[in-house]
Length: 529
Image (tube, rainbow, N blue to C red; front, side, top):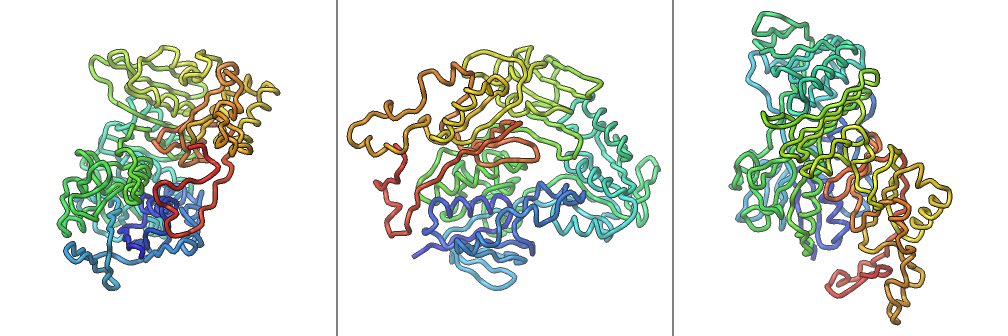
C-alpha cells in the first residue's frame, strides 16, 4: 500500500520534490500537493518578465497538466492548510481534513510589508505572486516602486516597458547594495535612468497617500499604484502553530528532517544551522536530498556553495557572487570598458578570490564563481577563458564555449567529428557525463560479463581530452538549462555558461512496475555500475 505524502506548498521546491520522488520511487507514495494559489505551479523568478509583458503565465509553468495525471500526483489548488495535528497525523484545510504518513512543509517565503503610513491602501501591492502581478497591471498611471534591491530594480524596469512613468525609491545609498560596489551601483542607476526610470536613493518614506508617495524630506512622487519590493520572510506561521521548532525558518537538519518523525521542510521556509536560502538553486538541491532520504537511498547531506545572483532585466546584464563589500585590507581588481560599458571587479582577500562582480558582460560568471576561495590570478581580470582549468593544463585566448551534455557513444562520436573539423580550436568544449566512466561501447556491454575489461570497452583514445584541450566532467549531472541566461546548472548548483549547447543524453532503461523492482541487489542494464 502506498504511503500518503502531503506537501504543503506548490512552488518550485515542492514541484522539484514531487518530480524527483516520482522518478526515484514512483510506486512508494501517493503524493498530494496543497497550494493556496489557483494556478498550477509556475516559475516565480520569471514574474518580472511577466510583469514586463515579455512572457505569459502559461510560459512560466513548471510542468504540464498531463504530467500530474500520468503519475497520479494530486494537486489541490486554491486551498490553504489551517492546522496540523501531529499526534493524529491529520491536517485541516479550507476544504476539509486529510491524513498523512509523510508531511513536507514547502511554504516558501512571503513578502515583507514595512509598517509605513498608508501601506494598507488598495493601490499598494506586494510583488511576490502572479495575483500581485495581475493586480499591478490592472491599474493604470504612474508607478512608484519602493525598494532598490534585485526585485525592485526588476519591477521598475518591467513597468517601464509599458511606457509608464516609474519612480524607484531606495533607502540605501546605491541600488542593489548587497550585490554592487559604488561604481557598479552608479552605472546601474545611470542605465535605468536612460530608460526613463527616475531613481532616488538615500531616501526615507514618510507616507503613502492616495495619489503620491511622500519622502521624509518633503518631496512627493505621483503614484496611482505603489509596488513594495522590500524583501521577504520565511513563511513559518503554520509550522509554529503546529509545534515545530522555528527560528527565522523551520529548523531542519542537513537531510531536511525536523525533530518530529515523518515531518520535513525544504526551500525558502527552512533553516539549517542558522542559515536560510532565498535563491532557487539551493532549494532545488534540497529537494533532491530530501527525495533520496524519503525513497530510502539517502544522498550526502545538503551543503551549498554560493552560485551568485543574476539580475533579470533585458538589456542590463549584472552578476554578483561571494563577498560584495571590500574590507580595509582587501584588494579590488577592476577593469572598465567605457565604450562597451563592461565592468569587472574581483575582490581578493589574503591572495584568494572572495567576490565576483560583473556588469555588461556576464559570460564568465560561472567559471569565475567556481574559483571563489582559490588563489587569484591577475589575468582573470582580462582573459575570460583563463578562468577555467583546461584538460591540457594550459590557457588559451578567448573562445566561445560549446557545452556537450552526455558522453555516451553518440556524444563521443560528435567530439571526434568536432576534432576532425578543428572545432576544438574554435570553441572551448566542456563535456558533462553523469556516469563515472567516459564513453564506452554500450552495444557490446554484455561481453563485460564474459570477462572483457572496462578498459577494452572504452571509446576514448588515450589522452584524447588532454591532447585536444577538451574538458571532461564525469559524475556531474545537469539539473537545469537556463536558455535565457545561457547557462547549464548541475545538481550541486554550479553554473557553466554556453554559447552553443548540444544535448546527447541518450535513453534510459524502462523499469516495469513489478513489485520488488526497487529492492537492493537488482540492477538495470545498460550501465556498468
